Length: 117
Length: 113
Image 1 (cartoon, one colour):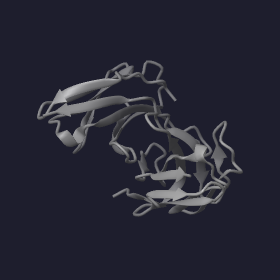
Image 2 (cartoon, chains in turn blue, brown):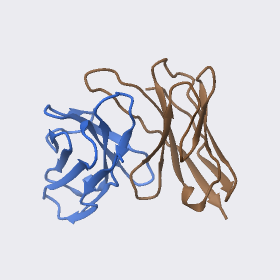
Image 3 (cartoon, one colour):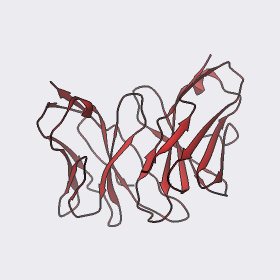
Image 4 (cartoon, helix red, strand yellow):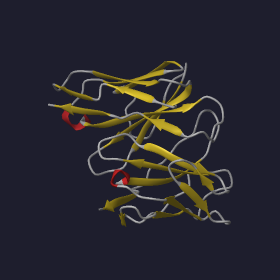
């Protein structure tokens, strides 16, 4: 149980294009989903927290107009990297926490490796 | 979130128990201790979590000291597939959907044949 699916697993695109990443909870409902970014040899850094049906909360230093988050249902959140540039190349990982006990663990997707040429 | 301190790396012989320590001396009363691991180029995998009592599941055991200032994750019979970075994290719900896990640098566990 508690499977989080992330798609695509890898994307390579040209500078200036926008890229959408999907995060789905497959066998549970997730009130809250989280988006992280991980650069090589570094730890995960939280970018934003999204709650179903409301606006995402972004961490300091993360541009909300560049990283658009939509959490329209209890099983789907999307992250769109708009006008991507080479410095946005990174490993993007989502996680989801099951509705209910607030101390239930987050479950993570397998990440999306984004490469901007 | 409580700040956690872990050794940067550890080695363990295949088949032996791997004991991964974590200090969390500033943990508050309602913060749980979570353990995750990350195998190269994958998302973190949940292992176990606890508040104050020891816990065991199919993956590992978690031993939390009585004062809750430290804990140990035990992999009873380490295999080569357990080679990963292990993260110890303190986390708690703080209302209005605010519930975060702050990842540190973790411990890189290398299981040696």
